[in-house]
Every structure is written in C-alpha cells, then in structure tokens.
Image (cartoon, rainbow, N blue to C red; front, top):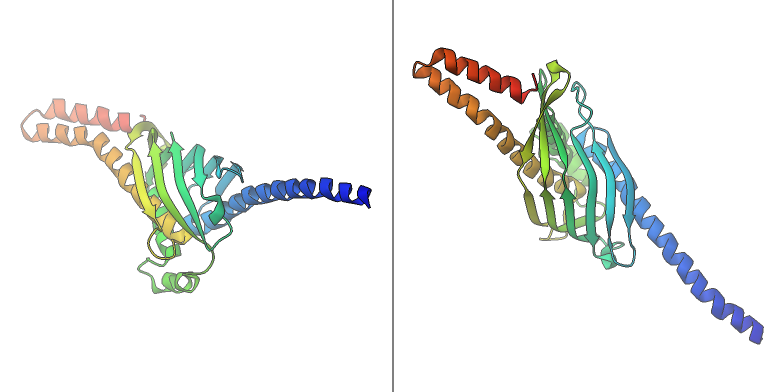
Length: 255
C-alpha cells in the first residue's frame, strides 16, 4: 500500500506538469491556427504566422514571422511584414468567452503601399475587411457577416502599439519597386472593452483603419514637396519647377 501511495504522490505532479505543457502547446497552436484561418477570411489575402511562443504561466511571449500577402493583381511580395510582435495577455481569460490582451507591441513593421490599375493594395484589403465585418455597402456582403456577429470567442485589446515602422511606396507598373518612408507611430486603446468584446473582424477593421490612416499621412508627406514644385510653376519658374517635380516623383518610386 505504501509503495502505491508513493507512486500516486509522484505520479500526480508529473501528470500536472504534462497537462500544463500540453495546455501551453495548445495555446500556441490555437493562436497560430486562429490567425491563419481568420486572417485570410478578413483580408482576402494569404496570411502566414511562422511561430507563436507564449508562456501559459505569464501570458507573455512573441509572435514571429507574420506576413500578410497582397491581393490579386499587385506585384510586391506582401502588404505587411512583421518580424516580431510582443504580446501580453490575461491567462485567466484564455478559455473564457472573451480573451483579454493587455498589450500588443509591434516593432519595426514593414508596410508596402502599392498603387496600380486596380487602385491600391491597402484600400483593397480594407475593403475586404469591411465586407467581412459587415460594413460594406454591398447587402450581399453584410448578410453573412451579420449571421456570424456575436458568434465565437471575442477579444479585448487594452493597448496596441506600433513603432519604428516604414512604408514602402511602389507602383505595380514598375514591378512593385519603390522607396521607404517612415510610418507614424500608432497607439490604440481599449479595442473591444465595451460590451462583450470585439469580434476578430471588428479588431482587424480598427487596426487596419489606423494603419491605413498613418500610411496616408506618410505618403502625403512624401508628395508635399511635389505639390510645392507645381506651385512654383504657376509663379513662372516653369523649367526649374518641372525638373524638381520630376526628380521627386522618380525618387518616390525608386526611378
């Protein structure tokens, strides 16, 4: 009997450790599977998440190798590339109806803004997200999203920070080539805090809307000098202004 008790006393902690390890592995695989499933549905592009390493004890860790592809018809390799994303989540909420993420910190992301005959890749992705979340002007797009509204696990993101990013400006006709401009920092708070939380579609929409706005700011800054040169032309400095404008346009698009 004593030997049996010893085996039980030794076996229980081992089983607990194994259960925790399995739970930790499951958490990482669930996050990876969720991103790679919902991402393409929302963006209408390929979405790759190379690795997830989040501790089941602390709730902190990293997502690495996130790549959001481009919609059909665009030449650059991707629209978004995120090497490392630091995450801190409330472990106690992981298997509840609302997962609470204390912070998502994205350092040095790369955004490729490509313009061509089909418009821009970022606008196309944003349109896909709107359709997925049920905010498209198309009634057909709203119907399936409305059915899905409220279904599945919701999320709450207390802080989403994007720093040190850059925007690659490119033109489809030039094979997706271009140059880089700084992306203004982003800090979003309390996504899904009100009510029962946000759906993945709603979270995608808010995040991409902020990125889209800041990408626009970066591009507007790049084109501001070109506008100034056009104004010089109106003041009579035609030859100098046109030459300067052409040089800047070529600089923006890497030609």
